[in-house]
Length: 266
Image (tube, rainbow, N blue to C red; front, side, top):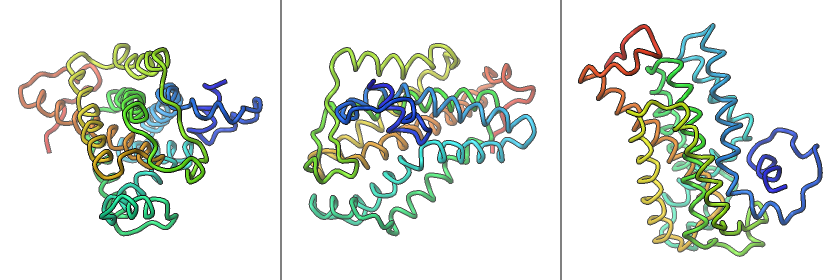
């Protein structure tokens, strides 16, 4: 039942039609966030691969990004914009929380989203098949990393002040293991061993954001969760891109199995 609640909460697909889910289950959705990544990341990777058969990779990548935005209802991007607004415009804990709860986007949110998508578009230089693997692996692993915020920080607001009207419960040991397995398994199954160091980039990003939230808010919010996921995912992509370029410089052509052309350095 908690898995169904997670799919309802983290996507806009009509899973709610399957059966009614008790409200208590939504307090346990975060451990299954990385499992939901198998769906969102899988659909995004599938869309990218199909579009890439007919269109240039740059256009196929944009279509794939739009597909995930539609599936999730821009849930995480909304959180990222609020995160940038709050931490950019707020100088105190109370002011930061107030700004983040405001439904209007500010200049920090706009600028943050613009730079986020500009960086995301840099992956268009990678081979199509390899990019599809990165999309799937990055979605699942980054959601696992982001989900750990609820285990290390308390909720920064009162439950009745929450946008989602729910405060997530901390994970049990079994839930942590489940979340980790769902997050790391795509790497084991699909990602070349030489790219495994990219696992560290989301972890380091998580540590930085954890310390930032602890210092500024002494806790986390739902917006912080969404922002943490997207920034962890972006760091994974950028780290993977850097690793691929380094391997290309030293003529380590492990990407040749994914394309007939070597990776070019721009």
